[in-house]
Image 1 (cartoon, one colour):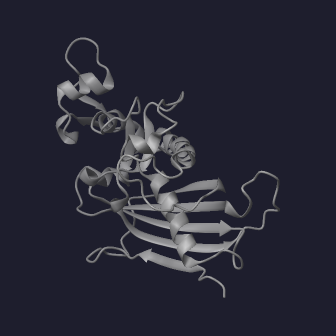
Image 2 (cartoon, helix red, strand yellow):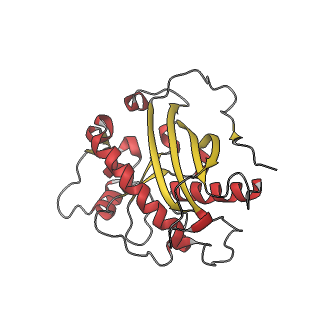
Length: 245
């Protein structure tokens, strides 16, 4: 029996206008191996597939970094310390101001990095944050070799989507960075889509057959091609989040 080709995991929150135009729309892509998440780490254990997940997270970092560099609002917006709840002491410690009084206004990306907890030497910049009052809708085109026959249980698809969502958010603790304790060149700051996966308010996955001929070492049946359409809308409209238009 074939798996359903389209699964709606989350419908938009009650009270949201589904016809409202998103403030920001863009796509992230991934091609490579995507493993199924099996269980959660407990009592300080290493997160399953931590290195696999972070390798994918690094690829999304590169795409999101390009978004921040090319989107006019993200590139140019400056904010006050009060707008992002950063104290001068935090700014000195996290941004590295050496002498004098820290600036009263700074680039949005630096403000977010200063206000996001550090793990090891990583300064994270999640785009979708609770304080921004943005709703995040994801529509994923999920092309896979094991569709529509083979190991295609709905549970397996669920677990692979769980892996994907984990790579779109910033790590929750140091265990998720085991083996990647030091950021690489070009990863300061490190860009993520989500502050927390709870901020995904709509999720639809359309699955289909990946027709690329198999090659040795390319991941076999675990290889996928993903196109992730991201739409951001205001939960509560503010003068700030209107700037995402």
